[in-house]
Length: 517
Figure 1 (cartoon, helix red, strand yellow):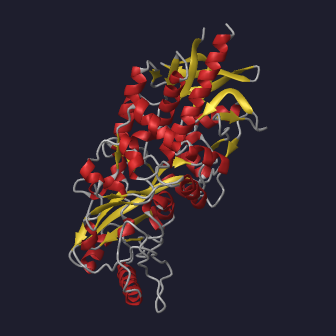
Figure 2 (cartoon, rainbow, N blue to C red):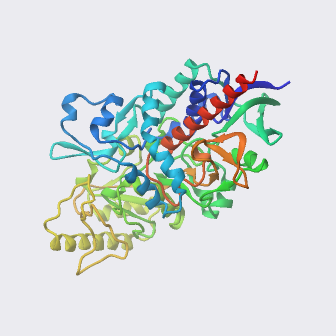
C-alpha cells in the first residue's frame, strides 16, 4: 500500500528545501523530501556555493535590515548602487544573447527581493554583505560592484545548515539514499513517485510532486551527449548525484524539454581538484576567480580570453568552457606582486591552492614548464607583448586610473598597438616580482537545459504546452532561464522564487482537496 503525503519534493538542495518549506507555510501538513544522496551529501549543489543571492534592491539601506555583519559605523563607509529590475533582467538577457524566456526571467527577477526577505525572516538564512567577494576598498571606502552584494555566513555550508534546521522545525520528512525512479499518473494528473529505498521500490502518493533534482552535470555520459566530447574532462564542482534522473522521469510522462541543452555554468577551477565530485571541505574555495587582476595563458603560452571583458560575476560562468577548449583543457593564471594582495585568501591563500612563484618572469616560466607549459619562449613573448600594449594605452590615456570596483577602461588597445586578444579593463603591466601563477581547469557547476514551466505557478508543461496537473519544478531543472552565460548568484535566487511558487500551489491543491472532504 502506498504511503500518502500532501506534497513530495524530489531533491533536497536549496531549491527543494524552499519548495518544501513554502508548501508547509501554504497549508500542507505532510511533506516529504526524497533525496538520492546519502545524508552526508545533504544540500546538493547549494552546499558548494558561496551562498550569493542576486536580488533587486534599492541600495544599502534596503539590505541592511536582513544582513548581520554591518555596524552603523561601517555603513557610513560603504558605496553601493541600487540594482533595479531592469538591471537584473538586462544582465540575464544580455549574457544570454536575448535567448532566455523574458517572461520567465521577469517573473524571477520581480520576485527576487521578496524571496530573500522570506529566506531571512522565515528560513532564518544568515545573510551578510559580501565584503570579501564583492567589494574593494578604494580611498578608504568599501565599493561594491557587479550587482551581487548579498551572501551567507559560511557560504553554502551556512546556507544548507539553515535550510536543514528550518526543515526539521517544520517537521518535513527527508528520506536520504532514496532516489526517485518514476512518476505515477492517474487520469492525466501526477499522483506520486516510486522511489528505491533500502533496495526495494516504494510507492509514495501525493496531491503534488515538485521536481528539484538538479541537472545532468555529474554524468560524464550526458555531458558528452549534450555538451560535447571535451566535457568528459570537466571537473564536477559540486554534488556527484546530479545525473539527469529528474529529466528522464519527467520526459517519460510527456513533460516538455526546453532551453540551452548545450550550455552550462562552468568556472575556472583548481587543476588539482577532485575529478568527479566537489570537495566537501574546501567546496567553493577551489574556484579561481582572480583572473581580472592578471592574465590567463594556455600551455602553449598564449592568452585566449579577455580577462577584463566585464566584472568577474558576468564572465566566470563562461570562462570554464574556454579553458576546457585549450590544449590539455587547462591554463595558468598569472599576476605580478602588486596584484597578489587583492586576490581572495579563501581561493588563493596558503594551503588552499598550489602556488607557483618566482622572483623573475623567466624563472617563473621555467617552473611552469615543470607544470605543463609547453612553449616557454611563446609565454615570455606573450607577457612582453601584453606589457608593451598596456604601456602604449597608458601613454595615450594618462588620465585613467586603475580601479577594480568599476570598469576602468585600462586596456591593451591603443592607436599604436592592439592585441589580437584584448584586455578591456584593469590592464596593468606584469613587471614587478615576485610573480605568482596557479594552474586551473574547467569546473562544471550546473547545466542550463531543463523543463518548461509556467512562470506564475512553476507547473511543469507538457509537450503541448499545457500544465501537467500535480507536477511542479524548481531549481536547476528549470529551462529557458539561462543561455550561454549566467550572472553570478542568480541560481539560488531562482530556486527560491520558483520553489516558493511551487510550494504555494501544492498548498492550494491540498486545501482544495480538504474542502471537498
